[in-house]
Image (cartoon, one colour):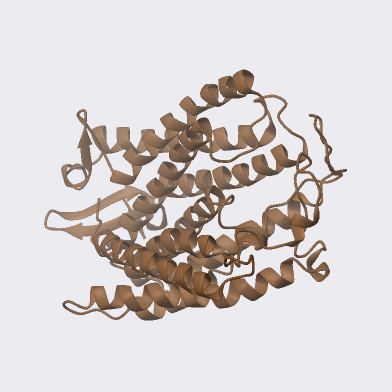
Length: 400
């Protein structure tokens, strides 16, 4: 079957009062490809800095990130021009108008993210030339770059979401549901990577701060995916994709040799330093999926309370004991990739200890302070969940 001379599989088709409306779906797949390139490039770039150090802007990870930005921007730019000058009036009516041009909301967000990413490149290069080696993820040029990356990934989510919500055939709904889950998993990977300094190392997983940061960030996205996705377990699928991306990068990077080129060098690094073992978000994500299905008038606040507390409780159970394993000698192997640190970090016994553990006046671990901190984490997670429910409800109605 064809539509206007084009296979239906290459079109995103739905019906409104004006009749059939269609738009090419290949820009969505291009933006998904770009999002994957960006997050893979980012993890590679962090490994490059941890292994080799800063040499020039024209490193392979940087080029992969910028390639992703360009592909996303060009494909969405074409989609805007196509919608403005070649699409039917019904298609334009279903688009968002900006400066006299028409295009899907996700395309506009993606174009903006592309411009921000490209603008961040000279800013980052100038920053390093002016201030030298930057060993932290959170810095002004990196945050500008991250903003552009996240915008492109949000653009992919909006494009997949609109296609999913417009689809009227079960097969198309399922296909776009998978596209949406993949985009969500890529965004989860980006969020987890940005939070690396606060919520990734096993040393931090006996600290209330870890659960407060995780409780503030992840329920927002997982609940939104669960509320708006059309797969049976959309949040769980996104969490599995996040884990798959990180594990693939962790196992792949360790295969390649690398050595530091910038002093000071405190560790004899011989291979690319991998990212940390991923968080087991799939466990609380499954609970989110199961609870997010419950709907009812006035039920959202109760659901937010139950889900937020459950998220922190389940994350505490899985990460508390996972941290103990990852700090043990049994995890210091290729599969788990534990105890691999950047070359510029001085070795010490601290790397096998827990950080920021609450203590009493005598300097002993304080159970009372830990419980209090976890209670704050639960409250933060409840607020994050409630925002996620509101966002997910809105995303379930996105059509443009």
